Length: 104
Image 1: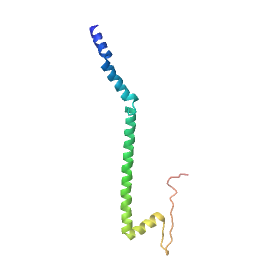
Image 2: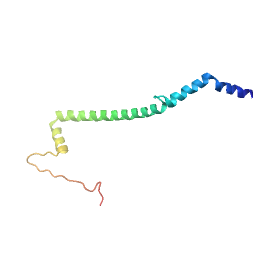
Image 3: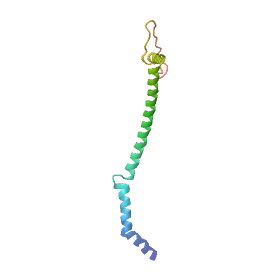
Image 4: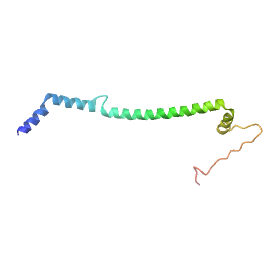
């Protein structure tokens, strides 16, 4: 009986109640609650991955641009492959692979 009164006295203590109320408020009701912060952390991680992806793409494109501006044979190869350009005295034949992606 004596221990029950001690435990009840601790739970009725105004500082204990205030601390529990404060923790509940910060965890569930505040605008920066735990759930919102977790969502924001996930979004930040996704945005950082996207940033790294785009930085890698920029590096690759910068290297390609530098290569195309300095090497004329590379520029010709790029134009022929990407834009199907040809010289005046040659014919260009396109071979389309219909077997991949379609099954009859």
